[in-house]
Amino acid sequence: MSNARIVSAGVVAGVILVAALRVGAQNKPGADQGEQERKVTEKDVPAAAMVTLKKMANGAKFTEFSEEIEHGNKFYEGSWDGPDGKIDCLVTEAGDLVELEEKIPADKAPAGVRSEAQKQAGAGGKIHFEKKTMVLYEIHFKKDNKHREMVYTPDARRYYEHGPVVAGEKDEDGDDDKDE
Image (cartoon, rainbow, N blue to C red; front, side):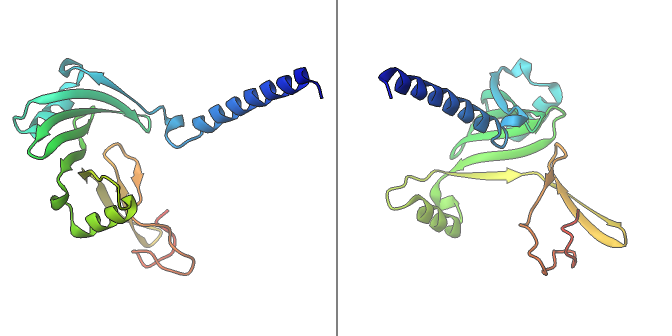
């Protein structure tokens, strides 16, 4: 095979590889959802969202704001300095609290979490802890003569608290239908 053919084959293989990587990146979870984040100013935050952010900050001075699009929904995040480090608060455009993330020192994390984190990070791993408080809504109802329980995020996405039900095992309702 001539050098020209080898180079041509290499170029074609490279183009195919780049195309395959692009397709793979587009199929990653979240990529097709158009997840994005951009810095904004306080005046860009909707009034209802700002009311909740100010309430959560409890008088602390904001250090930054951002607008985030996740799962096709728009959120606003306000950040401020807390007693142990940065605090981020995520809310919906309508002002519904979604989550609060607080940097915390290791001694404020539960012992089991610290132990597992060290095990996962390894001997030389430097670990940073954040406490994440999520808001979820649990609903209960009866359908088809079965009691149902479902959990949703403030933007109405279904949240699954438990792993899949193993064949032959019962879920928390005593049936094996995973409430779907």
